[in-house]
Structures are given as C-alpha cells and as structure tokens.
Image (cartoon, rainbow, N blue to C red; front, side):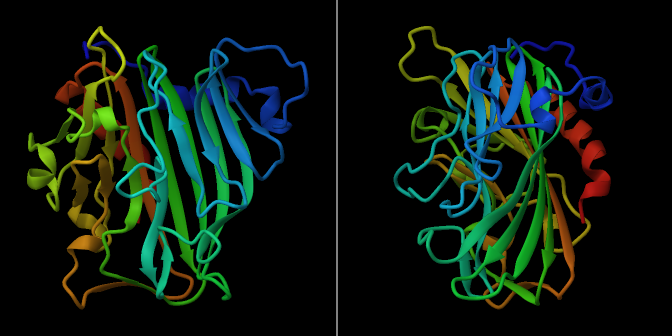
Amino acid sequence: MKRRIFLKNTLLTGALSLSKYAFADNPIPRTGDPADHHLTAYIYDSENSAVWIRLNNSILTCYRAEMFQKYPHFYPLRALRSGLSLTTETAQPWPHHRSVFFGLDRVNGANFWQNNPDKDRIVSKKLALGECNEKSAEILNECLWIPFGKEPVIADKRRFVVNMIDDETYTLDAYIEMTALTEVVCEKTNHGFFGVRLEQDLSVDGGGILINSEGEQTQQNTLGKPARWMTAYGKRYGRDDGLIEGVAIMSPPYKRLPFNKNLWFTRDYGFISPMPFDFFTADEKFVMPKNDTLCLAYRIVAFTGTPVSSFLNEQWDEFVSLSKEKRS
C-alpha cells in the first residue's frame, strides 16, 4: 500500500452534521429510488431486519440482525478494488463463524458463540441508522443475551461507524456497551469475543500473510501474544494481476482486567479475535456484578496492497484517541 494523506476520522465526525440521507430518518427505501454514486445506508424489509451499506450502488457490507440469527453480524465485508469479500461465513472447519461477529461461550453456562440458533441467542431488539453522509454511515443496535428458556443475562448497545478513507481503504469501528442484568460469570474459553473470519485467500493456509504489530507471523508466533494490531492479507483468488487485499484488526488495551493485556487468539485457517478468555488459568473467571457495565471498542481497516506498518500505527493512534472515553 503506498503511503498517502488519509482523511482523518476526526474530520469526518465533524462533517457528519453537514448532511443526512433521507433514509436516516425514514430508513426503509421506496420503490423506484434512484441509484446513488456515493455511500448510502438503509434498512430494508423491516425496521428490525438488516442494514445495507452500499458504495456507488454496489454492496459494501450488510449488518444482519434478523430475528432468526444466532447473533447479529456483518457479511459481506467487501474489498474496494476487487469487489470480493474479505471475510466469509459458514466456512469449514468451523462453519458457525459469521464473518465479523460478537459473542461469547460459557456465560453463566450458556453458549452465545456457536451452534443451536434456536437455543441461547443474542437477539436484536432495536436497530436504527444514526448520522450518515456520503462518506460515513452509523448503525445503532440494542441486543439482549437470552439463554434458552430463561431471562436475559446481558443487555448490550452497539454503535458501528463505517468511514471511507479513499478509493482503496475504509474503516469499520465498533463500540459495544454491555450491562449485566444479573451476576454474569464468564469462564475460560476460546470462543469469544469480537471475531473476524477471513476469506480463504487471506489466510495462512490459503497462501496469505498473518502478522502483528510486533512483526510476528503465523498462528504459532502470534497466539496469546500482546500486540497493538493484527493484519491478514493475500493475493485474491481468481485474478491474474496479483492483486493484494486485506484487513487489520485493532483493539486498544482497557483499564479493566483481563482486557488490559491485549492478547490475541489467531488461527492459520483464517480467524482473528482480540480476546483474553482462552488464556485464563483453569479456575480463573471474569465476573460482572448485576448492573455492571463493560465498554469495548474495535476497529477494522479494509485495505488494498501490502500494508505499511506506519499507516497501521497511525490508524492505531487515531482509534486509541477516538475510543479512549468509550472503553472500560
């Protein structure tokens, strides 16, 4: 990736108030609406189904929050040059992975991470668009973590912001506020929290590169290691021009244990998750008393070309500043 001057999110934030889509106030589009040649966001089918974000009238991503899902998730996450998704879902060997998703296993004995979508679920209860303009779109979502046949144990509020940087790069920021509705006990598990399942050609097993901010590569050298960011990239399948695309994931450390360690769970088959729970001792637990609130923040950078560490470090610094007051 060639270095260039990138538009800062702080400037974009100031620009958000300049213009709104008509869809922001009335997010269900009308039949016959004209195609837009910039970023657009709308909710279609019903106000509680999914948010579609399009760029130049082509799909960029979709936040799927339909009632039948195990949990809300993003799919696809499109690369700007090729138009191919950077992430996948239902891929082997773990077909429960859903592109970009958030959940956790072993929460008061319940599984909010995999399988049995008719059992324990994270259910979307309120979905809306926030501030939107031609380069940025905001998604607001409220969810309940409901064990099968029981009362909800967690209520969460999610804010996602998509920002276009240039014609080859954009970011997806996630701010998640979790509130315990009862005492919540999270045990040792490798299933959680914020997960990104890569398309095969970005994975190490598929010929791609997995590397962290410390220059360490592959699952063997990055699993359980602290890092500012993790990135995966590779040559896209089905092309003869050698086009390279990829994603970087950033999760600034938190004040609160165990999130202050900034450890990473990685897999060569194409999975990245900034999470501490797999690295607990056998009897270690994370406990949220009733009414306790945990605030988390993550950034995904979707890019074209081989990433430059200085650019990813700039993105890290910017996101640390933006999210400082939004993390526990």
